[in-house]
Image (cartoon, rainbow, N blue to C red; front, side, top):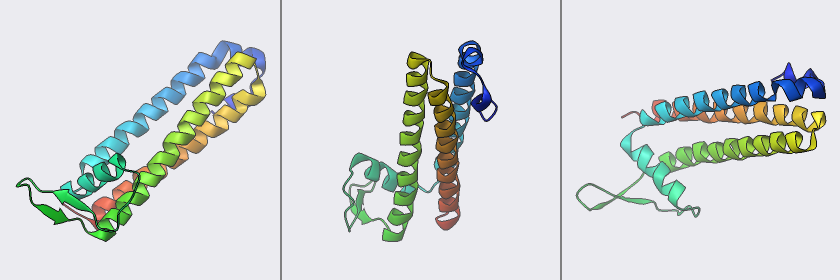
Length: 145
């Protein structure tokens, strides 16, 4: 990506599909690592993430349904840590969508300036995604199975 930021418009026209493929491959690799990392979370952490994903309103007292139908408390500290991961996940996703939109605009307008901006945004989104994965890994240490 950093090399692509130096390209002329002519080079972009010839190589844009490679840049998009590289970006897609990087996104897929990060998505896969993120998914594998979260599969290592405790069931309680995964449930907290599911609940936080289903509702945008965090409640002070989180409840989950146990397998026997009884409600049990989720540790508020665990919910806080999961919320941090979820927030970074959302920022990374928004940054990815912004980069993709910028690449699309660059292609429509034949703009190297926008293409360079798209590269910068893609790199930023990957950095956020890596940060989210590191936070998810820390959650494994903080709340082992």
